[in-house]
Image (cartoon, rainbow, N blue to C red; front, side):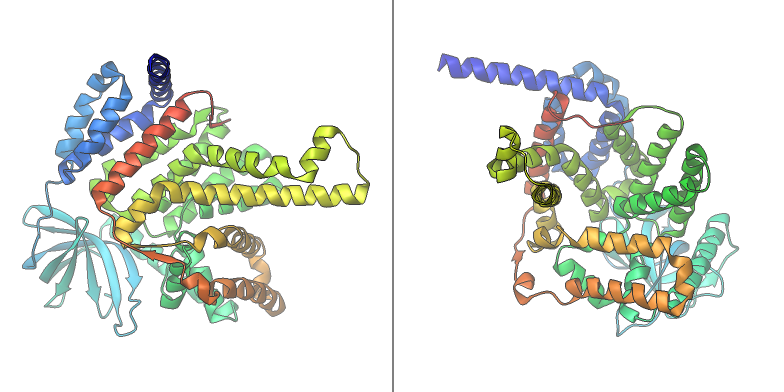
Length: 499
């Protein structure tokens, strides 16, 4: 018993020193976590459990006391409660920030999302209109307001809206809407297949208007491909940088890449995942331009802090929660899972045994074995990423959507890299799309790849678990795993820096 007690004490002290080192190296992440808890304590009582757990894990009471003013400020900065708990007849001013087309087949019209201001309250809202106004500007709306949860509401006008003078923000929304409409018309006029055109619009612009496409990807656990995130921004940044590096110097190529990525971000509809990806890749490019070494956790902390300060209610959004949890899952648990798979599978292969014993093989056999080794490395990498994200976010997905698809473990091995490569070809070869034969060839390749997702085998659709998890259990699970991951990351096991 004494030996076990001494080992537990040593493990506890080691975890304490690891966490102290981790928070010292990542101050921005520390302050973003403080802001998150300060707002969460006011919005949901179960956040107190998470706050006690993380405070117990910090082991830095001086740093905690220094951050106490930020905690109190964020607590009062967060909204108290939804001003419209029940349906009410209201009148106020609506400031649009996003325009979408109605996707339901039995409804035709437009959906405007923005901010509704009435009786001294400001809340995120959406308005359904049968006909889009001649210009996008703030307008006076009078009708029924219903609470949709997550500090959002829906407005149903009972009288015609009264347009007000346009502002700079509304003018920008209208310009963005006109540009995306022109891009839509260009895609549908040059792409022969309707399914491929719908997918290109969803992938490049984030406009998901095809219900069957959304349902198919959601059933297979591939919704992250249609949601604009770091995968899309990384793909576009790689394409832009590759093209510009062939024409100008590397330094100018990085500047042009940053400009084009910024323009692309302005064309997108605002969402937590796209905002996080844009801020993250912009900070990475800036640090690379000035030759600075940054830590990825500080970058994620800066993105989270900016998102919370701009919109405190976004912390209740599933998009923000799953976006950041996926990033932390890859950073914290990808390397341990990959090393476990490496120990389980690689050491038992004939190639590993021959490399240990120094046996030379003929060139043809060596080439085949090298190709098999690279393919095995890719499969283990993709499986490690999928397992890491499942491991951390599965309870939250069940608490939010009451279902989770296990078929995504299979489809995420090859579908993202396949569709990502095809979308890279579309981005590079888009001037050739004016030629009908080139557009037909790219369309056929993309349609064959999409058929894998749109018409999967029957057993893949049955690999869905239906169940309900409480939000308190999901919060406890996430806090416990983050505590373990930060402890591992604070030591010398797994480090992630960007040079």
